[in-house]
Image (cartoon, rainbow, N blue to C red; front, side, top):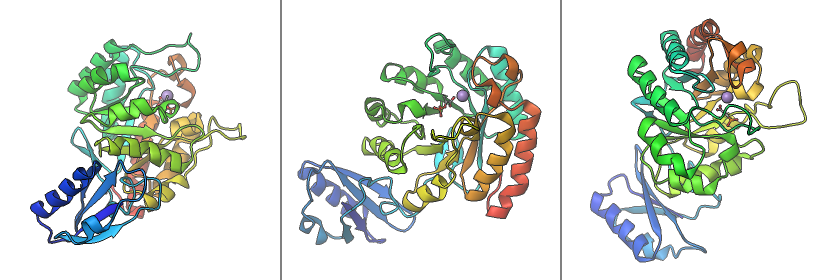
Length: 337
Ligand code: PEP
Ligand code: MN
């Protein structure tokens, strides 16, 4: 259930509603919007008695939420959410361009790529220190050493850092070094990890699972918001289908679909979405045209020697051309890059 407050409702009015919710043994989530505050209620098993709220001062409307997700829905918040990752807004007018290697392999590699993506116009840097690999014999990432390198990349380039967290045990150390924690496709429904990340005060980049519906993606995001973390960015990265001409099938229709029902920003990852270097630029154009809030692009200075995902990594000069093209394309859809 959602309680919509009047535009003129006071802080005391909101507090009174929150207190009434808590007195029923439930959780209240005030979501301030540009026009009014909505208060989401979670923790109830059945319907909540709306009469407890209808006559409280400052309450305009009590809306039973039919969708299984509540806090991520447009019903809870009409305006787009803009998430700040280390001071860089994601979800506003300017496209977020995230660049970096799949994995941090060495300080030299990570910093060199960092400098080239920053010069090309990237607004955020992403590189993996903990890598989810299909084979236990593949490179698993540098771990804490990789996190320390990422902190040095930030110091050298000024770019905020996004990096993946694989499990609950490493949440604290990853949060200590990164500006945003990525939940990869394989962990989208790792509910204990989501609950734990819901209690940190750092943004989370939540990637769509390889076979997840949009409803499942939004319910995973709901876990984060329900625990109190509202700084969530979604990411379409392709789903597995019968098609084998690309690594995954990038589902660009997910973007306008998510934007209709949720206020959360959504990025597109054409690198994992296609798995092929030559397909990254064309699908980036399509992603921006369809309304994505930004792109997540893998870049490597020596892709042929990359320890993971080399075939989909752009060379730094290709990334530079991609950003230049997105800058020309963005104004067509009312954005900047
Ligand atoms: C990654 O971002 O490097 C990654 C492993 O992606 P995904 O979780 O989308 O497969
Ligand atoms: Mn990768």
